Amino acid sequence: MHKAILPSAEGNIWQQHLYVNLLEEVHPFDEPHRFRSLNQAYSGENTFWSAPSPEPDLDDDFWHTVAVEIDNEQIREAAQRLAAAIIQWEPQPERLLFAAILRAGVPIAQWLCTMLPGSVAAALSLFVGIGIDRVALSRLQADFPERKIIFVDGWTGRGGVARELARLGAGPLAVLNDPWGWADFSGCQEDIFCPSACFTGLATLGFSRTFFIDEQSFFAAYTFPERYVRKDLVATWYQSGPSRPAAFPLGGGEKFYQKTELRLHSNEVCRALINALPSTLFFVDDAQYVREHFSLLLTLADQRKVPVQYNQQFLRNYRTRAACSLHIAG
Image 1 (spheres, helix red, strand yellow):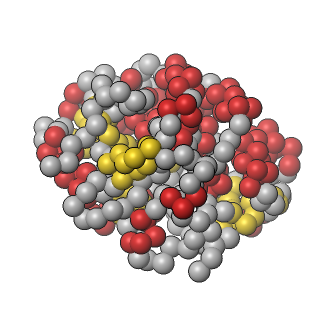
Image 2: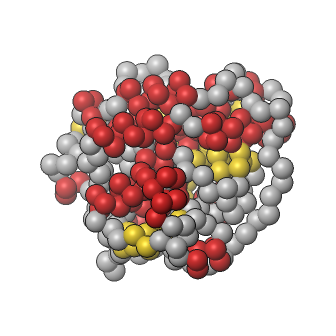
C-alpha cells in the first residue's frame, strides 16, 4: 500500500503531504541518462513520461533576483482574492484539502493554508497528456474522506490542466492568475509574472520532476542531494505571503480560447525555459518594458541561448504579453 510522505518527514521542505514515490539520490548534472532530452517531442505514448526533464543549473545571482521579486504586492493581492473566492465557496477552512499540482501548485497552496487556517495541503502529479496520478488521487481521497478537494496550480496557460480535470470529472481548480478564464477560482486574469514560476525541483523541493512508472504506483521522482536545496528561498516565500484573504473575491471573468502551438503567458513561458527548449521568445511590449517586468525570463533565455523578439503585436490575438515556440525533435 502506497503512503504519502508526511509533512513532518525529514526533508519535506513545504510540510505538505507528498504523494510521490521518491527513488534513489542522483546527481542533477552528472547523470544525463536519467533525464529525457529537452527537445523530445510528446508522441502520445506513456514512454514520454518515463523520465523527468533535466534541471537547469542556475547561479546564486539568479536565485537572489528571484528572492527579491517574491516581495510583490500585486502577487499578494491576487493570492488574497483567490483565498476570498475559496472561502466564499466553502466558509469552513477545516473542510478544505488543497491538492497542489507539482510543482507550481505547491507554493500557492502554502499561502492558501496560511490565509485559511485549518485547511490542509497535499501534493500530487498531473501532466497534460498523461493526466493525473490516479493512484495518488485515490490514496489522497482515502486519507481525507471528510474534506472537499480543491486542485491548486500556479496559473493557467491555454487551459490544459482545467480540461484534464474536467475530463476526469474532478475539480474545482484554483490558480493565482488565469488569463484565459479556465479556472474555477483565481486571483486575477492579468498576465502577471509570479517568481515562483522559476522554482525548480532541485532548488525548492529536493527531488526531480515526477515521472510515470506503472499503473499501480505513485508517479516517481529522483531525490537530489540536500546541498542543492535553497531553504532560504523557500523561507522567503513563506515570509512574503499574506496572512488573510481579501474582503471580496475577483469578479467573474470571460473564458477565452484560441488554438495555437505556442506556449502562452509569462509563467508558462518561464516553465518552458526551465523544462523544455524554446526556439524563440515573443513579447508584445518593447525591450524596456520587458526588462522591467520580465527580467527573469530574459535571464533564462540568455542561459538557453534563446532569441527574443519584441513588439510582436500578433500576440494580442492570443491575449498574452509573452509567448514562446518550442524546438522539438520528432
